[in-house]
Length: 81
Image (cartoon, rainbow, N blue to C red; front, side, top):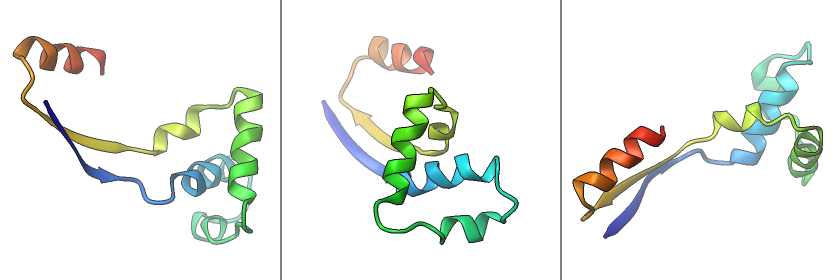
């Protein structure tokens, strides 16, 4: 089996924190994305997890290519999505 990472969300912590902040902020998205101090996004994510507010995590994506697996396995992976 061969697994390759094809694409991913750069700076996923910052994106998730910004998406969550955007729900409650009067600022626009561009301002929110650029408005994080060092380590602030990570602390905000910890708070989101504590509160059980996990839907902003859905903004992050990782795309993999998987080769050399059976058709049965590939159908299971499709079914799980």
